[in-house]
Image (tube, rainbow over all chains, first blue to last red; front, side, top):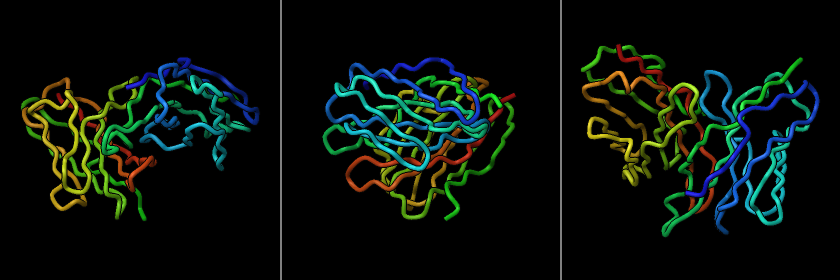
Amino acid sequence: DAKTTQPNSMESNEEEPVHLPCNHSTISGTDYIHWYRQLPSQGPEYVIHGLTSNVNNRMASLAIAEDRKSSTLILHRATLRDAAVYYCILTGSNAGGTSYGKLTFGQGTILTVHP
Amino acid sequence: DTGVSQDPRHKITKRGQNVTFRCDPISEHNRLYWYRQTLGQGPEFLTYFQNEAQLEKSRLLSDRFSAERPKGSFSTLEIQRTEQGDSAMYLCASSLYKGGNTEAFFGQGTRLTVV
């Protein structure tokens, strides 16, 4: 499986934007980039995913580098409820597509949001 | 739709005992995943089902672990002869796979403590 590299931790102030980076230099052409987050004492929660183009949804934006070797999750206005561990994950397909959906989590980035 | 539910939420057992956990996925989701998470680590993939077929098992899934999804709906994960190293959060996730990329929905997990 292709690997991702994320900073161990980041800090932000409430209502400021947050840019969470992820490096994935060994990404293959069919790998999707997913972001999940895990709030304390909760299961992981889907945030966003993309393949090549930048993506926006109600939770966040995903900016993907042109060479796809890195991406950035953008929280436009951090709130205290955004304090969580954020995971950047690659998913791909083998013959038959059985790898889609299997998530290989790393250690993620612990985001602390200050009031 | 009540989301993915797991039962029990907490389980304390003595070493050597057998335990069984249940996961009820989101209705009509054809894929169901089991993960294990220890403190400070990201979740680790254990196994997954598409409908009632178990399609992949991790090397982490020793012969003391068995998972079933007999009717393609709920799933059970059994651990026989529990060991202290089995203490972890066991997470279940489900997704609707239609041949491509999809998001997974996680339950809140079952926390197992082996004493």
